[in-house]
Image (cartoon, rainbow, N blue to C red; front, side, top):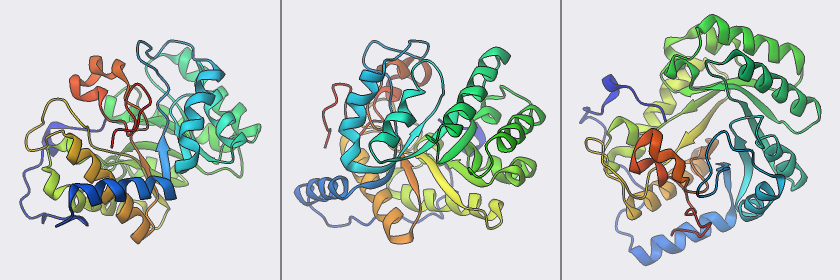
Length: 298
């Protein structure tokens, strides 16, 4: 989640935008299926089944079961951590012929941070990592100083030469923190119109502007949208309303734009995860393309 109060959507200059005007529900359901059948660029891997939460150690068997569901529908998998079973995700993905964006989860605990960094380096040196992400929204959460994060990024770069290294955060952080942008090989930005209260009707053009800001900040570096999505139910935020139709249509809009403009996008997320209610309210549990029972929603 990437959100800050001053970014609550108030700009009426963004036009309503969609690839989908005039399409019937039946045709949109079919288009959704066709997009998944053809395969998207990337999916964020949802590790936890119902009743599980971060801190639980997840088995390789569980990862393989969920990866088997995703394999026909994506070319890349993104993971968020390198411990507690998350280390199985890139290994299984690569064995199945998928590419991997692998993240080390950094926070306030130095011991956990060290295990994550060493885990990421170990996975990379074993050949399981195509792109390494050192931290996810650390600046947004204010878990580390910028200097500490820069040291971690530099360390990882020096220990896994030849593998692109970046850092994941909200699109605006790359504009506001040029030292971080400069040290990254690739700009890994999260773009969530929903979390900024943007009405669905303007969400595509708003997301495209988020990507534009990150691209300008990157100054020619590759830019990847590492998270974007829309919840299928839960609480509204200003003008952003969850819903089955909005979630389906946002996915379609995102994937058509990604394909038409050659924008690499990791969609958030693959499966609903109930534990996120504690962090984000009811809406946090409904970002998946598949529900918590691993059934396709649309």
